Length: 172
Image 1 (tube, one colour):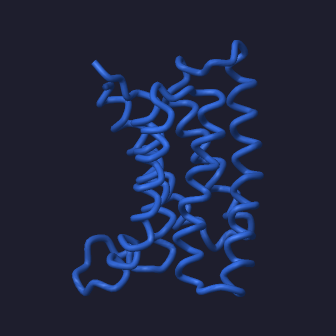
Image 2 (cartoon, helix red, strand yellow):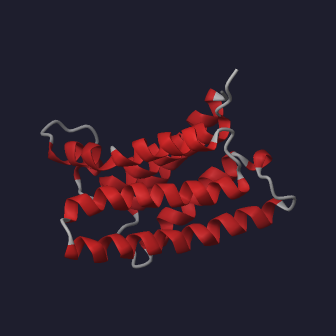
């Protein structure tokens, strides 16, 4: 396992989540999440891209990530009005992570697909409880994490960790 690359990818995803929180007042800020997530994963693992023209792989990953993000986002909020909202947020977090993992697997193949997908799904399912806990606790870690938008930081960090584990996980 390449712990340095896993840590670097995860850290880049966490910093991107913080950047999103900082720029959330911007009208087009929701393009930041899939854009930065795709760029973080693609660029920190540039040498492992399976497509011969690496820039084309990054562009493909970027454009499809934006499309999948908005499909997941609007689907989750549409269904949350019809069903129990909190359950749909769990489903939305997991569904978005699974779709992103499937998309990432096209250009950055996972060594062990099913175990990687299981890790990513579990990490995405615990995002909402962690974000809620951070929001509701009285102790102040970082003031920017106290808002409800902290789900983006938690999701990007944990899914980035899961994706990077999937890319770099090798059984000895």
